[in-house]
Amino acid sequence: MLSHATTRDWLIPYADGMLASDERRPIDGHLAGCAACAAELREVRELNLLLVTLPPAPPVAFAPFWLKLQATLPQRRTIKLPTFARYRKLGLAFAVAAIAALAAASAALAAPSALPDNPLYPVKQLEESLQVAVTPSSGQLPLKLYLAGERLREAQAMAYDHKPRLAATSLRAFGVIVNDASAALKHADPRAASEDLKRLRADLDAVERANVTRNDDDADIKQVVAADLDEIDRIEQPEAVTPDPTLIIGTQATPQPTPQPTPRPTPRPEPSDDEHHR
Amino acid sequence: MAQPEVPSPEGDAEERRLIDRSASGDQEAFRQLVLRYHRLVINVAFRALGELSLAEDVAQDVFIKVHKALPTYRHDRPFKHWLHRVAANAVTDALRRRRPVVSLDGMEQPPASAVPDPQDVAARHDLQRAVRHAIANLPPHYRDTIALQAFGELSYDEIARALDIPLGTVMSRLNGAKRLLRERLGDLVRSSDDEVEANTA
Ligand SMILES: [Zn+2]
Image 1: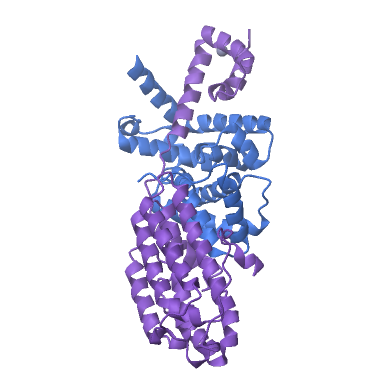
Image 2: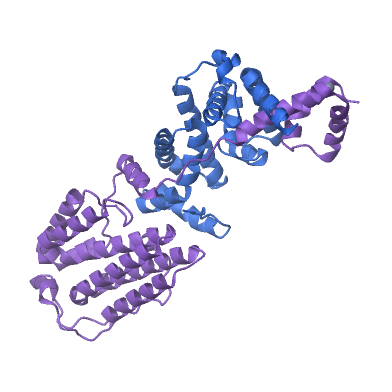
């Protein structure tokens, strides 16, 4: 027979179910014959009940939480245009214009990372369209590639967040932007353009993966992703297309009147970590 | 809106990638990491603090600390446990910074009108507040261990892994912590116990 003291030493792990059955048995025996220790056990269980019934938080929207957090992170978000350096060979005027466009973009976008489910999102859209309007034609392509990337980032977040309709909307917007930029892409440095397209493909893949991660992968998202991939395919077709005059990148944009056929990217591009091996 | 946590066995590689990229300054990767875990951290903070706006502030602090400390994180311990530990430290700090509304001395002899009634929402809130403050005032090694159980809802096993201590140590710390809590919460635990007995009799 266990003593009161020994029994009480073991009551807490006993109540937490942490004892093996051969450790429990002597305690059960003591408790059956000792009202004081049984009362003690009830108090232990009452405390446990208090500890486990602390309520969880009500639902909290992610987007505002992230925006606030992002604003306080030491390293502010930088607009990354990994292909920018390669466009530089197109000429100094282009580079200057592109730098100006980027500086303006990062300063002017008050809601640069607002997602489609954020109340600030319309502000972001407005700022983007202003940005496109004030950017000289030589800066249009990098800006559009950046905006296309933004749409995919949003689509991926919305797919993760279980918001397929918002994801599909961003994906469609991506298609429009890419279509809009297609002429400029065809006349850009073929290597740079091919890498940009490869990158966009990888990002589209990431959206599709985010979509599949949810158990109810959305057919609409799948369909728009496929349409967007077709759009990229069309741009990569070697034959010339009537160029859209508003989208040509200045006079330097056409160093080679007939663009080289761009190498076909591998059909399954690796996930979006291609900046590791540029 | 149900939003299940993403992590799964095959998600671990993806999580590892997100962690590595976040550590090297990729803010989009960090955003995805926060997307996965903000709910967990806000829940821990809310259980500890009982107030949503405060819990969100503390959760923000947790992720700022995580962001800063990520370069030192090593993959030999599950990220979730590491995060729990950062969160538990932050919430117990916040809990201690908050001056108790009612002193614990006052709570040991609650006025007759404040005798807890499980049906009474206000009384339940008082009880929860008393528990939180009692935890906040425990000696640090007890406090940090039981915070993981009460606020983080971790099992003994998970606590052992999160704190990198033997299971036996977890057991003895929780034992010590709960003894002190019972001592300090005294009448609160007992009177609601009587209530339970009366209800089930
Ligand atoms: Zn006894």
